[in-house]
Image (tube, rainbow, N blue to C red; front, side, top):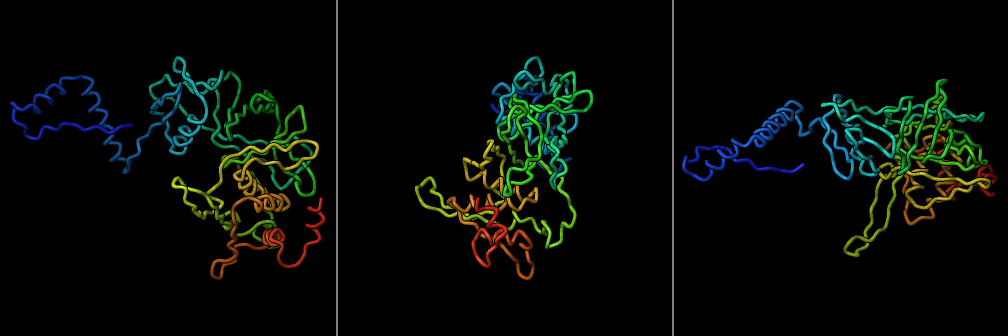
Length: 349
């Protein structure tokens, strides 16, 4: 993706050097092919009313490849460019590969490149408000059997579908399964992944993971839901030092700071151990998404110990934004108002 300048014949004198240069360029077949591509590009821009061209930019073997697909999707285009930069893909004989897994066939003139969504359900007998989870932006491999490849927080998840529809999951080549775990009263009924040969738990947070949560009483202020997403009503003010060694303050919504992360909760104590403030922000949104107030309080306690200041937008003019049990949870963490013996009993451990 570079810019080019073209000579256009604007009544140059026949004996001028510009005219001779244009003649030489017009006699070059490669130049003519490029001019034709530029004309097609400009026509597409006029049709689309934008500067976007329907192509995928994929990084393989350390170099970018431009692929014109049969079916174009802007969201797919953005994700493919992002994921191929962060993970090492290769291309051999027109086959795009990750490790030894064949992902896409790039040999046709306009290859078929699609991303899928996969639905996963818990294998454990314990149930929560989350009925199942869906993962989007999933690769379907070129395997002889049904197989899917997922990337989350620099981790690869491989899912093999057996004849009876059962799914075999491997996280970084280690066998795992989807489970709903009751850790304790604070971390209760958490949908997550569990290693098959152990009791350690993996919690992934990503915008590509969607949880189907029980919607019963969603907008009742006495229930777990609110009319506004709570993560949109919390702002963080952070102190940092810029490149000029000057102290700066930055205020942003937590919803604008969400990324992907992986947190492992180790058996048998199931203590929440995080390595960064970013993981806590992601886990806070995760707790809100699955409507788990105990988990929300625990993460909020951890987040208040970091070097950021949280600001809660309780109301906007006459509109109440934070209400119900979520407001009670925030008040409890801030230690204002009346005591809450129920939460005291849970978190005194």
